[in-house]
Image (tube, rainbow, N blue to C red; front, side, top):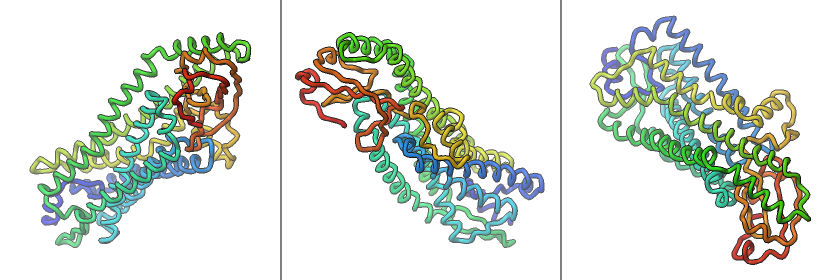
Length: 420
């Protein structure tokens, strides 16, 4: 046992490793550990499966942002199954029961889920930044088909990167026959690998999120978007009064509703990022400190707290969606009642883009109507429902304004490309 203890103190801690203190063998510790892990993992597994199901089964839920949330849900499921459930067996038996292949495979899928979840968070952060801060560019970049390609690339690249763990872990057998799954390399060899992993999948995503959400907040809360939208809409109404039969009050309500929806979904995604940073901080800090000190800190209860935070991070996202998104809440309720969620009004979508005005050559967010539109000769308006299908269709919360222009001069049509 002394040799096993020394071996484990010589290596950084991992979610798969059990605490070495005697308290971990106590009935109290085992009871609390098993209860917490089963509770958090159970809620997380059910919630993430529901996220995947509602997006895959409901056509109106298939938006670029939701595609990234599905990738995040699958990654969280991987973490909960590969890290949480084996931890229950380890707590009950006090030894590793999954053998050599289980040690390699479970460790691989642990880090695969962790890294993909970080990349998925980064992906939807960049997607929100482009959609809100660069709406013209978003018409071609923020599509479902592009999101699927990005997600596939993230999973493939991360799968290749995580193969490194096949060479870093192995079974360790003590003199008393106690078996553990631990690291086979010395700390000085593992440290550069961990610091690289820590930087790429924790520090960089958080720094990028801070910058991008700061820019998004400046657009949504500090820029006079609402006033600009009202002024532009009024200008368009005045110039096209004879052919446009849309009431000003209803238009202003839709504009404010679109802006409110964007703020709400941004708050929801920002909350996911904040919880990712906070819940991973105890474990990341512990491993970082233990990588430099001569005697690692391995308090059993603190290790349990760190693990529980990790599992909670993978389990809490569906709860956030349900609390902050009307569309997800309705879809979850419909799935629970075994009802198709297709009947929901698209105006309740919190991940939709703002209303668009589409001309024969260009597409404008309604918050950025070009002043040249007051030169239109013949304008007709219609409302309809169109989903973001990834090939040019854009989900706009139930109302898509299409402006068909006849006889517009070089001011709008010249050099433009049709996005529809």
